[in-house]
Length: 563
Image (cartoon, rainbow, N blue to C red; front, side, top):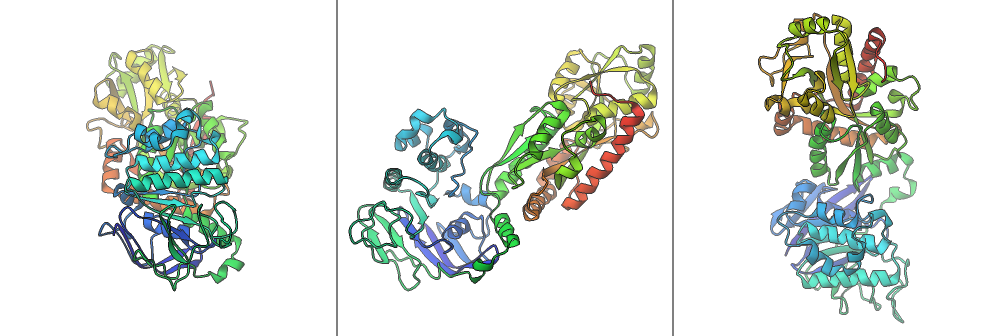
């Protein structure tokens, strides 16, 4: 047997939805579980895929217990789930959807997959959202195949499709069976569609094409699909059994709105999550977000996709998130500019503290006062002396107006009397290119985005902006050793639109804290100069509030302006 389920108990939302479920699936076999809505069919698939771990019982895949494994680990073993929502990326083309899904060790190449989905060949350059329902289902199955599965889990593959499209999907399933791909699919046996019903066919068994008044346990000879129903008194001729699959949840009739939110949180995430980074690729926020998104994607079973939305001093990306649905599927990489801009910009279309819900803190990192290699000053004291001897002739770069990089420089100017020209860029990456080339002279950059350039000797660090020296930059002093009282650090975290369910926020917060506690993650963050700031959503909310108040004073006292 490729899959063995023994007496699992699984809870969904408020209810004990699976009770004592047992099921066997042979290698190369295709089995359809039929049952009414709420019978626990989808929960069965999610339990196998690791998304809804069972409270009791055992799930074995190819002889190995997988009930305690994370979704990513189960996927790597060769199990792929195609959810009812299909799980494709609507803003990517069909070709891009397939390309990012493929694993290196997969036996399926794009050409071999497309041989089984000829209808997709002419739609490869079409965005996922422009595909028909049938094409999206085909693409979802094709994406799953690109991961190289030996067991394919299909959640209502004919949901909402026209009869002819349903037949095409089922023909594809039959073709995959000939390739020895084992499959477990679920469908409702309610009267939703008339497809496949022959004269005398049972009103309860119309969902799969070819149904002909089937008995409760049988094999559809035309499709060669074993149909197993919710009745616990029957056993499959293939050796499997379904016990208690349709245990009714009495609370379902009186479930409250809070219960609905809990169920949504239990399922979360069911599809890809957008993570808005309000800077271009290559800067501190982008580097950090990609590190954490990889962890969240692997541990939470869905992709956390970075979307860089630069411009407007960070405000374009923030406004996009503020206006997004508060459903947990849009996140913001919160950064110092969000606290600074509250004072620096006079007419923002949002109130950050009011409109963004804090989710989790990520790291604090020092900024670094950096110069190009040709700059004559070798330390902070020499820099101040040179600046005062050449007023207005030093170009101070930043990753954008209102960023901590900008305000760290403004604080330095106000405390030292240096007269420097602020040159804002759209992100740290382009600013560093100009610093290396000598077009600008100094930057107070976040350490994560500059670390590689510092280690490569392309720029020089004069000092760090934190109150203490940075272990990853041995021998580099603090600015405060020359300018007493100077201190500025960058801080980063995760936010979501106001109104996002608390259960979803708590779920992301918990997984983020697990990431920050991981020794390998801590080592990677340390290389970038980042120190984890784990805690509750409320803890991160306090960080946002205190930093907003702190930088408001700096903005006012320095007279910082938006260029």
